[in-house]
Length: 462
Ligand code: NAI
Image 1 (cartoon, rainbow, N blue to C red):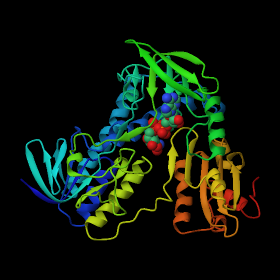
Image 2 (image 1 turned 90 degrees about the vertical axis):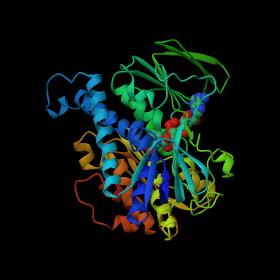
Image 3 (image 1 turned 30 degrees about the vertical axis):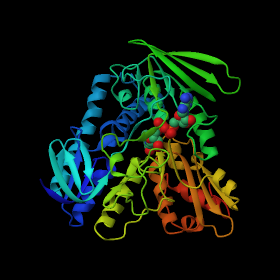
Image 4 (image 1 turned 120 degrees about the horizontal axis):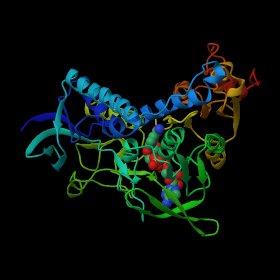
């Protein structure tokens, strides 16, 4: 039996970041992970592999659509799916090995296997029981199931199976127009798959600013993705190579079917805590099946903490990372803090979509007086030079104080641009603060400044 100051269960972005911070703070740390490699869903079957496929297929799109215009003549590249898969795997391997290196560097023990918690202060892996003054649960989430839909990870797949299909399908039905459905739908649409997204609601990307939802959908349609909105999928009927998807339109209850070679179920994820044995310990849960925690990420059982997708809040790797660092501070007797009001969200399609803070709809509902500064990438010289003039930056600021309340971006590098606004919001900045900051020319970030200028006397290039 070995004993530790802290044992973290799960090595995804929440768990591994927490382990590194615990070790940096001088705590004797171990991390339990049952997968063959570290990094959790994000590195192995989520964020990282999907970004490799998004990048590769974006390059294909550029070659097919924009090369000739720039004087780059010749045949567009053909797709070698096996090599693209190998490239994706290489990306996963370098990242997961990188975490292994960081564990060694920080003297973190990787306990291989699946953990259970027989009692507070003890973690069991296989036949071994390890002692821990503190336990941090960072076990993440798994795809939610959908009634009437049976996943086989070959024809009816989740976000895991869809990354490793044995060939590029001719027809794909995506259930759910959330982040996963649209990112993966983009990958396959660029590879020539006929993609149809079936969405229950009347707008894509639930919870996003309405302006972004409308424009984003228009852009995706132009890229060839089909949408069936207001449609609830009832069931799938799959053979070894094909599937039939049955859905009902909400407006008239009429029933319809679609044929597909592959069906992607992307209707959300649910917290994963199976097999941990926390029920027997009296760990309180929320109504939605998440582990309930207090302001210090401690569960109802003293010495057991939880972070990331397994607790409340957006299921985002960077939210888990922030909680991972903060809970490490708490365990080390310091003050950990996460500002939940400034957590950006990014969709890695092309153009990218990014947001932080309040949407216009939320401000209206709260009865808050606000102003809108909006700037189109068509007015941004750099964007036009690289065939990326689609989209806009929209900044929402308090009508009286000019304090930035939210930002919504569709456009080139939106996922990077958003952080300028995040920093500004952390400092309680006004739109004028951004507008008065010199931005290098020609950069995409000038569009952020122009939107900030539009909150005041007006943008220059509009
Ligand atoms: P989601 O919650 O974002 O979207 C699911 C969609 O499915 C919703 O629009 C919902 O209305 C629809 N839906 C549900 N039942 C349906 C039915 N029977 N028929 C038709 N439509 C139905 O879930 P998603 O895309 O699966 O993502 C899961 C989580 O993973 C999210 O929290 C997301 O933020 C996170 N994620 C984040 C990424 C990023 O930050 N880039 C990338 C991938 C996932």
